[in-house]
Length: 386
Image (cartoon, rainbow, N blue to C red; front, side, top):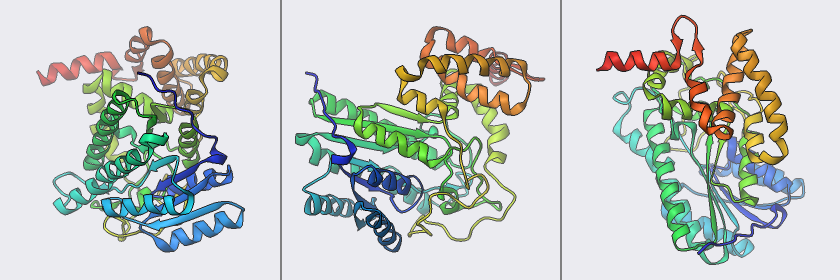
């Protein structure tokens, strides 16, 4: 039995957002309120929440807050009750709260590993199940924040990657169960690449160098746009940034090459020149109220043509084709490293989505100077491992 879900316009919605006191959550809250949605904001930082709600109200918006740790199911229930008491319920629930660590897996304490999972995985489980209970009859939307590392793991963020893999598995399983019972609920998984937020400032850093946002880094507004799109258009998943889609494709189709690449480049890509911050938000609220981060690479981000096109495929199909041809020509000609990286990050996802029968062969034929094609490197690495 299929269910037709009619999502309300944003101006008629009540939207709950966890992790709302900084970064993606804060950006989404401001954007939703600007479009007329009533927002219920949750995080551990009351001072930041008070300030954010005041700013929204000053601009004519409607916002209330709840101080809550998403790892605690009782505090999740308090968020639900606040939405019910203030607005009679909610239409969209956004599970955005997340924390991080940087360090080798055997270097990080068991306590910190468990705390990360309590927030990143169990926080989304708690929020999703509470939202399902509320929306099962009336209908609505649940949006979970995964990551590009939901598909492609990286070093130094091993437990973070594990938590985001778990979020993907949970979200997909929950979606299947909701479809089986014909519940009128849309469930979306958002998979951002690196985003210019305070996440990198807030993470507990076990290394001796600053946690750097690995390029390419995208603007948090790109994620907020995707979240609000999913709140009004049933959407299964959204990759934020062509790089996120590209890395997922590499991991899926050339896993040996991807792991070799990560081992050679991703440790350095995540470490800046500065010293690590001494304060973090793993076990208590951090320094919130900011959209962008202060760490290297996290102070500003780029737009994602790929993500915007994926959200509006019909309207942009002609433009995509033209840009893809130009980008591919630049990439093949190797004019500049920047052009090549931009083309690779944009074209590969496009080809993978639109030309499924030819995308993989084209990606495998990409040539890396002095090393050969991705396909050749993959074969050589497998021979060595045999």
